[in-house]
Amino acid sequence: MNTFNELFLTAYNFFTDSVFDMAVTKLDEAEKVYSPSDQNEFSLEDLYILRGTSKFSQRKFDDAKKDFEIALETNPNSSEACLGLGKYFLVNGLEDNAKVMFEWAVKNNPSHPGAQNALTEINVKLGFAEDDNSLFADDSAESPEGKDNYFEEASDLFVQKRFSEAIEKLTIAKKEHTVFLASIENFIAFNYLGLQKIVEAEKSVENALSLNPFSSQAYATLGEIELLKNNTETAKDKFNLALSYNNENTFAKQGLQKVENMLNRSAELDSLKPELENIIDTLSAK
Image (cartoon, rainbow, N blue to C red):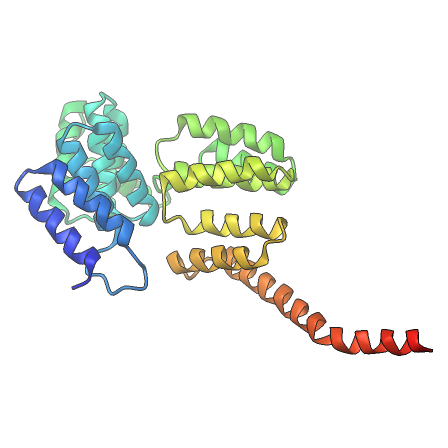
């Protein structure tokens, strides 16, 4: 058993014994040693859910919310993450928001007893039928990470290369959104790149990685930034890191191909140098 699995199991045992502070400590250690190339019995989603639940049990609700958000970014179909966020909204008196998240928890896993019980309780409290779930009435409903008007407007502005206006929309979305904040920060970084504001773009990517240290898209954006700074080897490392977290990341694949092409051209030029030097020497001798 590898170190990540051992630490996760130790954390789980602490959790079941209600020693939540030690559970969080071990999960922090597990996160640091995680490698996607290892054969892990548990996923990062499992880690974030268990850590969020441990923090919630400590009544560290805002910290727990961050872990549930990252879990939902890692797996947008996570019933457990939706359930955790629903509980967060509930303890903060946001009952309508809680109902929406409980509905998604049930939709993502209809057989999840905790999700179904939570939805039933909030339905009764709000005066709905016990089994009310608006999502089943409309299968085309957006998932909880779905774009609101700010995202749609920002996307349109980005396509039109109106980057400053897009950043304004995304800044508003960042204040009003409760999930996928890392994605918002990364989109802001893209717009700063459009404005050739590399320092600001780097800061936004750093914010994204502080919210989700395993964000494939954030590392791909860093790769693009390094390319703009002519650091091809560093860019290659960032694109490879992005692909290690999500091997389907098209942007990272394209970036890596771009780097490979640049390195190949550089190698070709280096191979021609001796021949060019000989030609120059010959011409000089004449």
